[in-house]
Amino acid sequence: MSTSTTQSPGHARLARRSLEVITAHQAASGAYPACPGYEVYRYSWFRDGSFVAEAASRYGATGSADAFHRWCAKVITDRASRIERIIAVRAAGGQPAEADLLPTRYTLDGADTGDVGWWDFQTDGYGTWLWALTEHLRRHGGDPAPYREAIRLTVGYLAATWDLPCYDWWEESKEHRHGATLGAIRGGLAAVGAAGLDTAGRCGPTVTRIDTLVRGQGLYGGGLAKWLGGAAVDASLLACLTPFGSVDPAGPVARATLAAIERDLVEPEGGVHRYLQDVFYGGGQWPVLAGLLGWHYARVGRTGDALRELEWIASRSTADGLLPEQAPGVRLLAPEHLAEWEERWGPNATPLLWSHAMYLILAHELGVSV
Image (cartoon, rainbow, N blue to C red; front, side, top):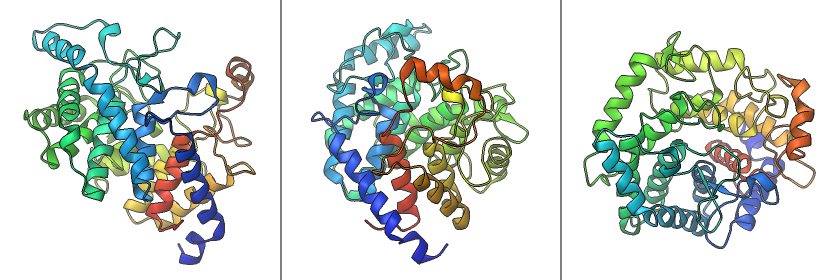
């Protein structure tokens, strides 16, 4: 990687544009919509938004990141009694009704979305939020006091529900327990524990239970599997390596996981598919995942490969600097399914704030200034 390449006007321009997209579309409440103006993505996800806040935090938009984290904390504390009931039911050996569990997305003012005919129960976003919040507080020397109650409730909720089957990052495969979901939960709990914010002492024991379960049921071919007991790989597992560090990023499990993803899902010129059986919008390549892959490459010293992913993401931007959810004009895994999704939901979601966030995070790792 050369300094002249990473500091090219094109990367600085897209980084500035990405930060502008993020801050311009943030709601007054602090929530980040997944894709402004796109009907089915008009909500705020804890997972997407946490990575968006991480990008804002890295590039000095601290007010934007603060506002998102305050929004998340209010969403949690507004549901304190609901969370405490879930914890009590699980402690008694019971199973809460799915409708009683926390959803994966909220309206921009922090309300439940209600029945919109779309899958809902996921836990990865809450672990991702804990990780992003602690990173932000550490980076900027922030005061954790306003977040302590929300952290306590979120840790308790995850300690009570981490082992329940739920939808994965992609709102699919509800019947399984997913490697990436467990990695996100573990990452958040480990971050809270390391920051000394685990007032109830729940983080360490839960992290140990997750590690034991994954070692016993979550590996295939030496690497992490898409779900427990499975043999497939999913590119969301990259987050288990970087940033969550569920396994040693340079260790044998990480190397085997990365090798499987590179073999099955990474295109030679850059870009990453979700998983081999993906049919959503034809199964294209995701800038979000290229950002995750590049982030890991940068972390383990493969800077040339990290730069390839940065360049690939930049090449997918529109003329006015907007990044899509999936990259147009690239190889599809299931092209016969593209038309049905376009008919159902319209063109590919653009701009996806999460795509802009992952570009920014990777650009920051590679030293791009704005």
